Length: 266
Image (cartoon, rainbow, N blue to C red; front, side):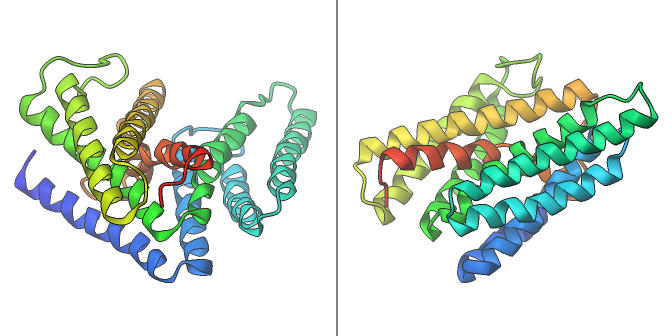
């Protein structure tokens, strides 16, 4: 990788860090708005990956609208509201399919399945952030970022044997283990500084979050290969698209969200 590309990646990383930092400072409605806008942009990018797709513009617009409504439903704390939003999304897709099918019997339901999959993949996974404390948000973002960064540089410097070449040809065992070690150490250091759990629990949490980060990365890699595209988008210089930057975080966030239901770390 050239020095110029490193500089681009660094500049983009700084900008990406500034946005969640702003939301963390204010939280509340600021966090909600920042998260909803970010999810909408990422979801738009996700739908674009599947183009050409019938009704793409309609699906993108509906995706953005349902993202705000869905996150708002979770923010209320009322358990029944998110289910109502998902039912609304499904039946909206069903009605649109019926209208399209009535005028063209060769129409496929696939675009509407993509619409629903996007809502599950991005805003549903990220909704946990609305209930996280500042320390928890920093934890999950840091775990994903450190896992990715350590894996990238360890793999670039020393990686030879590939871990899953059919899914992600560039990722190596050395990179994977380097990311695991870095995530466990960073999670434990952060946890012992700000949390209440035992060191062994922090180490196990770090391992779990790293596995989630790697699986999230592998999933997006497989998705891109199945669609025959290199990057999810071109919005971020040196990084590709938004989805390329948060693929790990998309599984780290719900993983921690589910683990914290069984154990308190802060």
